[in-house]
Length: 263
Image 1 (cartoon, rainbow, N blue to C red):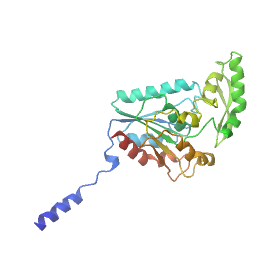
Image 2 (cartoon, helix red, strand yellow):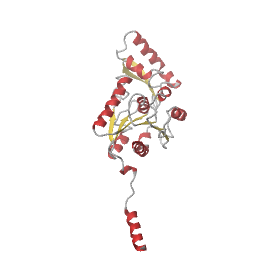
Image 3 (cartoon, rainbow, N blue to C red):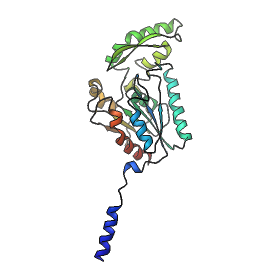
Image 4 (cartoon, rainbow, N blue to C red):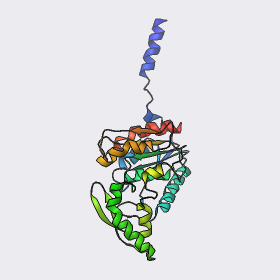
């Protein structure tokens, strides 16, 4: 009897344990959005390709704030782009759908939580809060210029205005005043504190705040997390990395969290 028990124990030890990597269901779809001035081929590429290699259905999409697009459409149009990406994943068999984004993409993922139906949101080092006093001061001149041009009936004529990003400061972009104002209105869709309160409380959120993020984002991370609607599956995750490294450093956590939410 002891011999049989010993053999059974050996067989059990020989069976490899099932890890989160091995049980990712193929019915999970995830939209991945890059940061301000970025592209799908830069800081979110590792995240997108890693998830895809584990069985996820992934849409790594170029958003209006990319290096090439320079806010070529307004916020409402951007919501539709995300919705279209989700529908594309659904048509491929996705039954559980997630929206993720890095930096400004993370902020927009939160914004989309009040407008687009999904099963979960992943905000990776969200930044670009137009409601923050520091940020408002950086773009105030361009916001006022955009409003003036709109009042003059020139809202759809492209012109040079200014954006701001922590790592490179103010820089010129060419877009229409109407599109620009939809993104930079200090009380609009990209005001993080205001729009966080509008998120559907049934949508759980993985809020990723790297420990070596930009000082301004570190200062407000807990406050911004606390403004999110209460949901038992909403979680604050703090990987040991910097702002740009956050997508790659969070792959395993994103996998475990999405599987938990999906199941």
